[in-house]
Image (cartoon, rainbow over all chains, first blue to last red; front, side, top):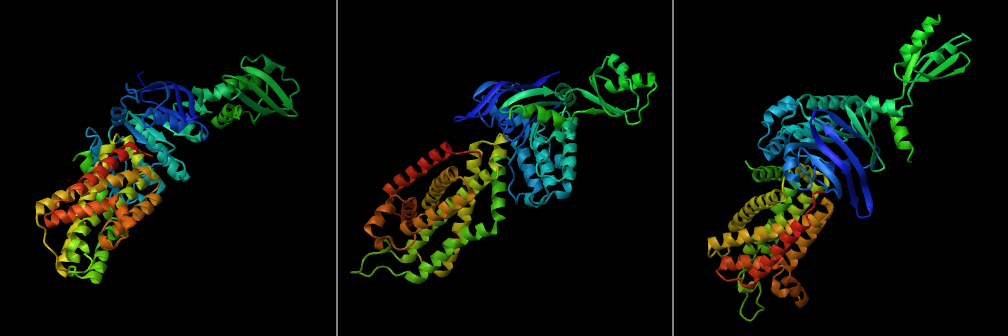
Length: 300
Length: 249
């Protein structure tokens, strides 16, 4: 797999304030890579350094083969961007924005087809300030891909959107990826990261504290899997012989089995083999949110 | 169309969609001109009186002065407000992310200021021509040449203000303040001869005063000499400082 973005030991300071301390990760072509972290963790600074909008103080950065500190301008012609806290003039019309941004990089697609593709044609002559939050995000996504980039950065796309618009925006992100564009997505929403991302870098306190798939993070930090059921049976010693089981605790009728791997299937098989068929047998996995709180909570 | 042309065209359209700014930029100099015309008429100074308006008729004095003034009003109020507002809203940052250069952003401001100044001056001249009698321009070529230099210089000054002022509100307030001070001290308000000597000293460092002299002298076929030097120095310094302190966010 081709690496489109590689950053090693990125550091960024503003005077004596350290905004990013030690950030290292790489992004493969075609994936949706999430950067997840609490507010003020250094997520935005990180991706703005990667786009050459801010100058990294230390570290090795390579994006699409460019060093953003040296070839920022060439790099920015080949990436797409949706920035946090960035807007268009209220009175600019949808078509004018698309026309303007497509003219910035002449190699891009014709803006009319981008407008059709992203469902903006009915809003062609609407002014930016009159669009709903969801429509504005749709326009931002269209502007980000109007130059047919290989890599796009989306920073906090769904903050302030209603649940319906969030879902629609998620679909837009998937569409971008389905066209073969690699996506770097900054978010502080766990559900968004879990829903969209192939891999996630968790940033906390200006550093990357974990990188994995959403499931991998849960596996690694979620404290394993738990299976619960209720039973009247007195002796459950047989469960201790199941390979995936790490421990069994009992409170009255309620039994909690902790373990790893395919715990539910193995416990179920063992129970059935010993004549037990509890009706409330269930498996519980830590959510990404639990993991996030575990990872980021330690250092607070 | 190139980036500069496209950006200029969009900026011009956006400007025209702000009715209040349009009215202010185009109408205010006109209103002041009519007020002053009503007060002073077009009498030249009588022998023995204090010489005012450089010894020419008030309207012959004010019309070229106001051509210079409309350029200043477009450049010193509209440009800083627009630049600061675009920066405040993140528009500049978004343009930067699409590899737009500072030259294109500044160039588009100059281009829009040029168009607006020409329109504004044309309206002013047409209105003045209908109502008042004033000396016609000695050399149209010289007037156009000075017009171009004034637009470039004041636009640089406006970009400098837009670069150093943090918010659109601040830019608008400071722009207005600078413009009104220049209006009164720069020979576009009361006749310069009636100002106190302190005020006259202040006039000497006011770009508008030199702009007024340059435009009047081109109009009357005179040589503005030192004013050229001072105005161009202010323009170049503004351009250098404006680009030096330009910030995308």
